[in-house]
Length: 423
Image 1 (cartoon, rainbow, N blue to C red):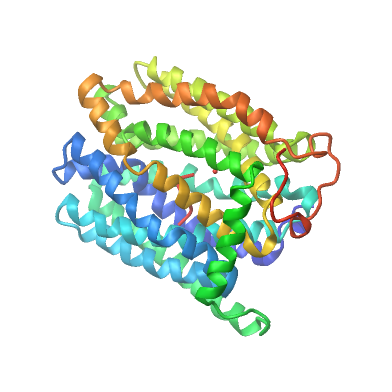
Image 2: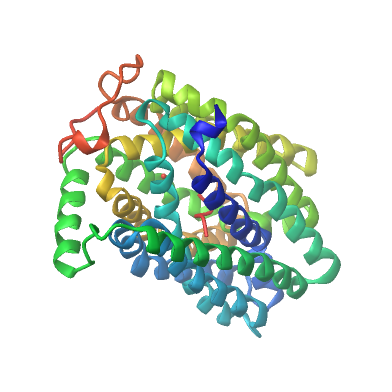
């Protein structure tokens, strides 16, 4: 059964995703602490994440569109080359300001890889099993959260950040070599039917996607709800590791274990959650998952140490398992196959624009009202959005398991009825 759901090329691609993202997850949860170790204060940490959010805006849509135009693996190879240079700068940076260069290169890597990742999965799956395949692939992908954070936390605690970045760069380099080999083979085997990228084609595709987004259907409400949620979540969670260490007194290793345990929870439940999405409709997983995430934030704010945080992170893990395959399946179902990469890139860019100042504002709230202040806003936003998502994320006929129409046959303007980004 699994062999049918996941063909060999997809499994090989997933192996490179695991290697590259173990590397990125070794340092991402600790980035605020790394900035602090290089001399940044809380306000500068917030400013860093805000400035770092500008870089993806230049690449997200382009990366997704080139994935549609050049080919998925070719786009992944371009992103990987940028990513390996970014890792090198992380390793050698003498001050926190230099890390902005790394952030720009990492953003380029994510912009080229992430839309291709989601699109490749959609193209390898049957419509009736879309949620299940997303769930299975993302279960495999969750290895990165199980291994990366505790490994990075341990290396940073025991040997320092530089040794940790050396190990991460080695893993990412291996993934890059394999991706370049896969892209080269795919190019040799590719048919000549793909049109060459052009500015005219980009304008045409963007008009189509934007028309769909503004049509008042599911894509419109995904943009609105995710925009609100992304702003409020980024107010708080860029500061998460600072809160865990400076307020609750956790070590870097304990922070890594929290994320690892959450990832184990997600991995164990993801495949079943994807099947749940296929059976009962995507909105069930999305609404249920975000309700659990909001509950987890409340538990986190009431925690006084590691055990309380552990309960919160398990809730985060269950919530993520419900949300991720359902969201990806929902976007894939309402987007034409030829524009899936562009669509995923557009959504990521839109969220980045809306939430651009959020980390810096969150740092100001931290300084003005206390460390807990930024974390209350995601709870409020989620509670407001839950009934909206329940109503607006319904696809006609799919909540009772009627067979959905293939995405290529859906109208350009669908009728009314979202992420650490992969590197």
